[in-house]
Amino acid sequence: MRSIPPGIPALLRSLLILAIPITTVLGIARVLSLSGYTVPTWVIIVVQLISIPTYVAARIWFGLWRIRRNAARSGGVMPPRWRGKGIGDISLTVELMGLWKRGYISDGFTEAISRLGQTIDIQVLWEHSIVTTDVNIIKTILATDFNNWVKGEEFQHSMYSVLGTGVFNSDGDMWNRDRISHFDLFDRHAEVTINKIKERMKMGEAIDFQDLISRFTLDSATEFLFGSCVHSLQSYLPYPSTSSSPFKSTSNELSRPEAFAKAFQKAQEVIASRSRIGPTWRFLEILSDKTAKPMHVVDDFLDPILRAALKKKANQDAGFEKKRGLEVEEDETLLDHLVRFTADPVVLHDEILNIMIAGRDTTAGTLTFLVYLLSQHPQALQRLRREILSVVGPTRRPTYDDIREMKFLRAVINETLRLFPSVPWNVRYPVQDILLPNASDPTKPWFIPKMTPVAYSVFLMHRNTDYWGPDAEEFDPDRFLDERLHKYLTPNPFIFLPFNAGPRICLGQQFAYNEMSFFMVRFLQNFSDISFNPSAQDPSTRPPAQWAKLPGRKGKDKVFPKAHLTLYVNGGLWLNMEEAEASESV
View 1 (cartoon, one colour):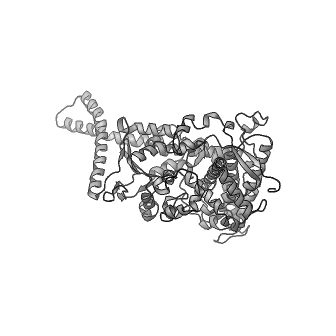
View 2 (view 1 turned 180 degrees about the vertical axis):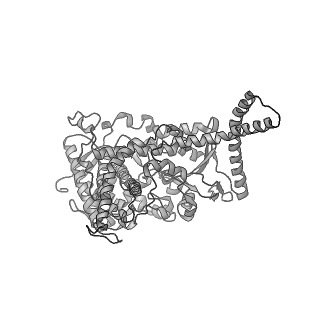
View 3 (view 1 turned 30 degrees about the vertical axis):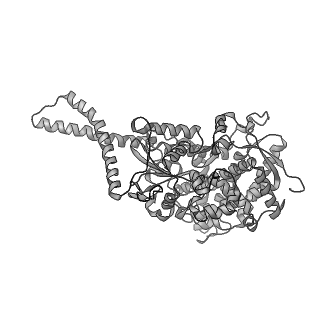
């Protein structure tokens, strides 16, 4: 089914629905004809034309009436409605799609929630969609009532052409064991990354840290997943838009790993757009599946790797190679582990792509925003360097114990994840009509109809002053160390969900913390200062100048945060860095 444009089945279903009133009119005309009453053809045609909108309106009215009736019977109420303009509030879709492309993360929703409350109802084309930032509702969905919530068919359909089923439940032990091989892997790729920065700084040119760190996480992720990395760090790095470097023209040529990364990002942008448009996205893809072209590049990259893993497993089964037990072994890659449980190439393909997002995109995004924040807060940067040099020294490789000891490093990572969570929005669907807590009036719980999308924003919840205090939008790692930790987070841990929560909590969170911590230690052992250089960036990708006059982080941030499935910086993060003194660093 992946080869069939998704708009074709949707169009056929719609035509079948519209055929109901047309055939009903024909049936009635036929019965009248058999009874001796001949209905003129023009009358039949006119009645058919009238019957189509009448039937559609009746279906809509009945659906909304049934929801109101069920809400009244349950003792609940629908959340306040964010009203748009035009038929079916269609203006909201147009407005939100425009804000998604040109606005700051969550623009539109921020204002609506501020005006209407933490939980709101959107009815585009008379279909309910709920949006919430209420921690009690998010806790209910992810933990206390987990079994009554699913990803939902609509969400799965919009994501299927890229992420497939993602059904394999990989062993969390693969991610969370403190394996020495993980640090060996991080160190190899960190060394290459740092050398790339030093080479660029000697040229006097700025470097796109986001591009560089995405290569670091891609090489690390592919080595962890497959046992051999794709060496994306060996390809040419982009140059500033103003650079006159003779290497600039050749740096536009994409290597195979770069083509894979770019295609995978494009595919994610398409499916993210689908989820924002809603069910009508299919009608924009009647002639072709917009993910087909980028996924062809992705599949060409992955398929040889998967075939090699399956061949290796077949050799083990035939006795040509050492056969492994069910336990996780020290030298085993994640793909080695997966093929011991399934030989289905489609399942392996889908699961690997799911893990690639979890293991590469989220970590790269967090490190990008972390280094950006340090460039804006030199006191935090120097304090973090002092901790690293005090605990690890200027050259030694950090150990697990070192990382556990560095409390401020962990606080800086957590504060970055609070302000810029990797997955800013998510969605779940209730499997039955359900009541959710109403913070504004506990006596009138919110009524949520069966299989209605409930989108929750960790991004907005993490910046909510009700949960984090009046300085919620400020970067202050000490909130994870001082009395505010016990005032806000300890009594209400669900206000901080960078890795989701409940049974679906991210299995790789410790792996991610280790990778980010290790890289930051090596990075700050080698560099003593970071300077943000927006002049190196394409001017069209910078934040609009008028944002600087606005309150909150939208007015404060010097970068333009955007998201497909995960957060990233529009146009890259262009930096200059000062290499540490020889007495401090290698």
